[in-house]
Image 1 (cartoon, rainbow, N blue to C red):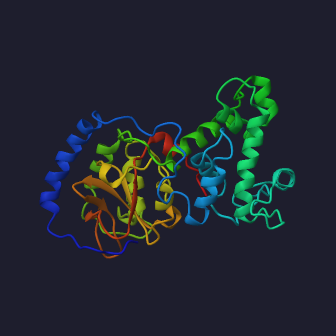
Image 2 (image 1 turned 135 degrees about the vertical axis):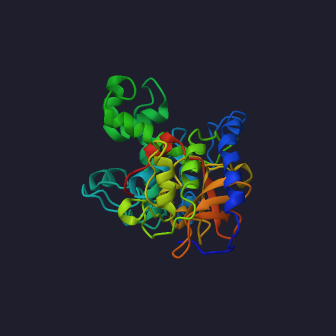
Image 3 (image 1 turned 180 degrees about the vertical axis):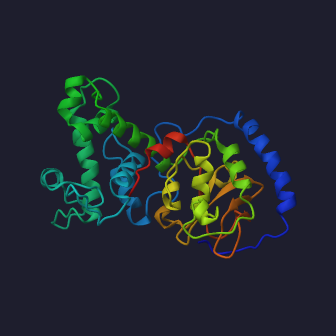
Length: 333
């Protein structure tokens, strides 16, 4: 639920005409933009990594040429959602999800306090970077992309990469490599304009048809819920209408693609709001940008789906949803 900073009234009639123009125009705008995130960036997108870990990820993500901070962040998010207390059914532990045997061999004392503690991100994050770089050194002579070979070794073992001369023909391994390299884009700070979403206009059109619908906490728009939504239920349904499946909650939706700057927003971008502007995991509200400084959103209990302004004190940032980015997101973190 989002705090109401400004109440917008008397916009419905004007808004519908405004929306019609946007739906037609968004594709015209799309054809005139430059390419998206450039290669080689080691910057982190605003707030994508919780502030408590950002310095660690930035520092250790540059440990060797096979990794970068955005890639390291993508691995940590995929493994634990930046939860230092995470424990899997397979006994993987901590923010980097080391199993005990791997930790015993590859865990390092990252903060120099004389202990190697898998539950301490100050040890676990440096250990994850160190392990990645060791794997990269094991497969450095294999043909192909060094980073992809390193990720494949992480999933399938270095021997498999060496045996097959690159990423082995295992579906699980190939999917893992694609997942992490795709997620990397959502943690990297864009170095140029971000490609527009081809599904944006239709997602807006879906949300537009829901204007005036009462808010429901946990609402997914189902018949038994009277077709009502909460904020992330609306954005999920809007993009699902064009074949893009987003996670259910707003803070995970933030990782569904790269992050345009405020001045670069396009209709269809998801816009996010938080009380903590340094941590994407604290995001608590999301809407769909429609242009002109406004979004369509399901704001709070007692309100209806409506147009609201984007430029409020709790504005966190935006995501340009991509189909690959949405597919790469873990189902639970």
